[in-house]
Amino acid sequence: MNAKRWMKSRPSTKPEHGPMMTELFRSAEARLRKQDRAKRVNAGGPLPPADAARLLHELQVHQIELEMQNDELVAGRNEMEVLLEKYADLYDFAPAGYLTLDEQGQIQEVNLSGAQLLGGDRTRLINRPLTAMVAPASREIFLAFLRRVFAGGGRQVCEVSLLRGNRTPFWADIYGVVVISANGPRKWCRLVVSDITVLKRAEEAQRRAEETEAANTKLRHEIARRKVVEATLRHNEQHQRQLLEQSRIMEEQMRNLSRQVLTAQEDERKRISRELHDIIAQTLTSINLHLATLTKEAVHNPKNLARSIARTQKLMAYSADVVRRFARELRPTALDDLGLIPALQTFLKNFTAQTGIQVRLSAFGGLEQVNEDKRTVLFRIAQEALTNIARHAKASRAELKIQKRNESICLVITDNGKGFPPERMLEAKRTKRLGLLGMRERVQMFNGDFTVQSAPGKGTTVQVQIPFADARARGGGGAGVLRRRI
Image (cartoon, rainbow, N blue to C red; front, side, top):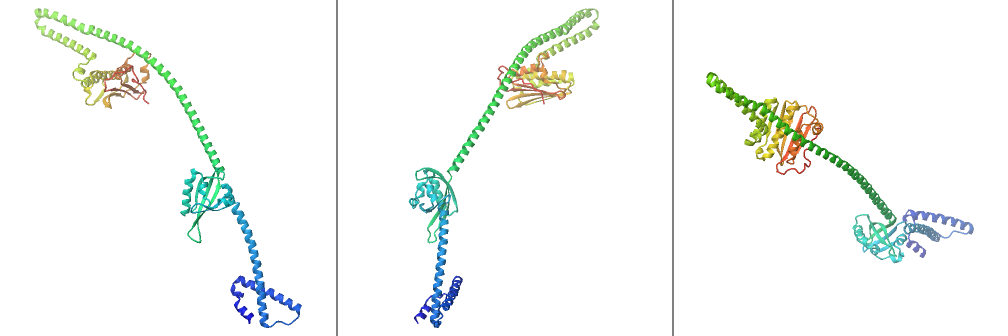
């Protein structure tokens, strides 16, 4: 009865305990049958009673089952030891340091690689704050990194300078992720620390190499710039020599111009003297003769007296016209009495009547407020330019415009004539005409600009620009530029 009670009270080892126990039970039962068969063969005695036999059978199966479980546990333990050894090798001897920190930043776990990186014994590192091993310059960066990690934003990365046990700094690359405990709300974070000092040195070397290359590039650019400056200086020196030569040529031209002015003045005096002698003197002599005959005709032929007086009056009128023409050529009275625009209109009317060239005149209001000297210069330039058109341009029409541009008076004279290369007109050795040079000298008196644009077959444009201010030129400056139209 005690055996039966024990059998009822013991845990069942029948198949309902699961597939593994069922297989174990069958293996134990098979082994027990083999052992019973061998005992009967060896003993040759009678079988025990049914209850005793069943109890014995159960006990023997349970014993074998325990032995087999023990064998499996031993095998599992050996396998776990192998796996634990592999895990220890992988964890402790990993190429990077593995650390576990709590929310206060204290080290809870560290592998051997991490301990070597930090330069201390693993047991002494436990419960020490990792912040104390961070260089002061990187401490704020590391604390911000820990806050991001424990905030649960996923994997975080930072680069900081850590201190070994001997306070030697090294650069570390740290990856961190938060871990929540299964037993409560407490948090840890796991860090992977890698020594990147060599990489940082390589980056620094690369940076220095790039800086050196940039400095070399800057130096090459500076060398190139200085070569350009040197070339510019050589060019400027050559340009200065050209300007000096041009100044010498212009000085020679001025001397020639002065001589030509004197010659022109003398020629003009000769022409006026000749015309006065040939026209006025002869006319006055003729008038004197007519007056002498009038006395005789008054006595002997009173009928022809009126006819003789009429001829004498015509001679007097002709003499007065010649004198007035001389006066207009020397200085038009309309310029002084009426102003620039009426003087130009009178001149253009006579010019068109003599040459057949149609000229259109336009001017801005307030032109007559310009001082007398500038009005005279504008009139003389217009007169000289139109005279040149009549003599050389073979034009059928021309246009004269006087405009106000900014703080200057601009006179523009254009024609549809045959044009000319303006450089030839500036060479005093190749021409004795005053022409363009005389106009340029008049403009330079008022510090103005004088330009001529012309090309064969494309007509000519003469442009004069004189400032409203009364400042006179000081030595010519840059005024009087002549250029070919492109």
